[in-house]
Image (cartoon, rainbow, N blue to C red; front, side):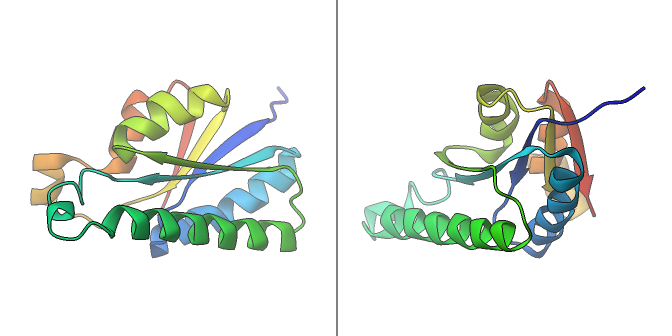
Length: 144
């Protein structure tokens, strides 16, 4: 049985775990001659309350997202990947990646890093990677 992934979403947030997931995605994209979709979700819930005190938070979060994706695009191009799409969304990463971003690109695979949450945090709010694996309609690779 021969199967190739055509459209691969890699969720990046600038963490060490997402950096490892990104590096793994480059190998898989090149091996399958796939399209790489670099996805970052600005978690607008985290700064919604604080924005009442500092109106520049949303703007800084957007600037960070653009710089982050631009950096990953440069690394991907340097690694020999040519078919790259950038995707910056706003909302909850848990929901957006699996339920909106991947389906909108007809992704066959989502690659994300494992989180470093404690057992207590995971019990109360769950991890992003856990939610992606639960709700995605395609394959998911969680990289440790």
